[in-house]
Image (cartoon, rainbow, N blue to C red; front, side):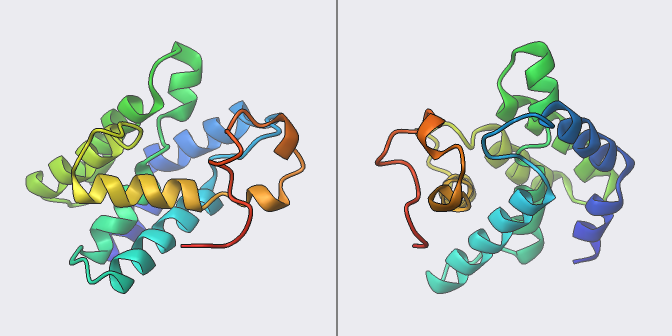
Length: 158
């Protein structure tokens, strides 16, 4: 997990997360902070283990940590956060020692994690974990959330 720890220590990662925290300071809905990113990573890893899906743990964690990293930029530029996250992830992954093939795999999943048509396994697991990580059943903004009732998590379930 050395390369994952390099992501956590990466200057761009840290400054982008700080900017995102400021941008979401008054947000009443789910935030996209380190807790969310780690929740997604853990759910992805557990899901892959329980379903005998052979994915490298570092790939899973890197993907989850970077999947929302472009949100602040997307807020500012009114662009797709997944695409912005893929761009930033590409830079961070290269600095943290990931290979070209690994970077391609991770940035593809990150860039397309909202695209329901994407059939890539890593992307599908990311999309699943991203949604399952939300504790809607405990949210004070539940009634104001624009997620449909069938999409909201009303309990813990994988």
